[in-house]
Image 1 (cartoon, rainbow, N blue to C red):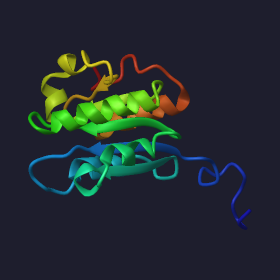
Image 2: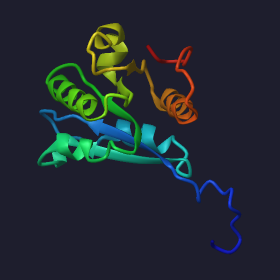
Image 3: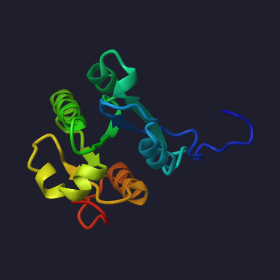
Length: 154
């Protein structure tokens, strides 16, 4: 044990892993939405892993390699071409870990949340800006609580 730390220090406990995925797209920009929502989570309690499909040779393998000890997978989804990759990755995640909550956020789920939930591999959609909603979701998941009544979720 490091001098000056007590055994109950959150930095000594296991952090919960949150995997965030940026699907393939026809354009290249930094995944700023994922950086923003990921940085809103408490780094002493959560390890945030961002997988950017545009930088991976096999993005689905890169995502599934991170899922064994994750508490959720968050996918940012734009209407158009990225949906195909978001669907493939979400389905692969569910095949790998059927118990893992898969969250979709971004423009498409904000406009079509109910329709997105018709897809069996999508468990939760986040409406509008997701920083506070994701923080509430992962806090509830980490405590084993229901997401009923979670502001910004469908």
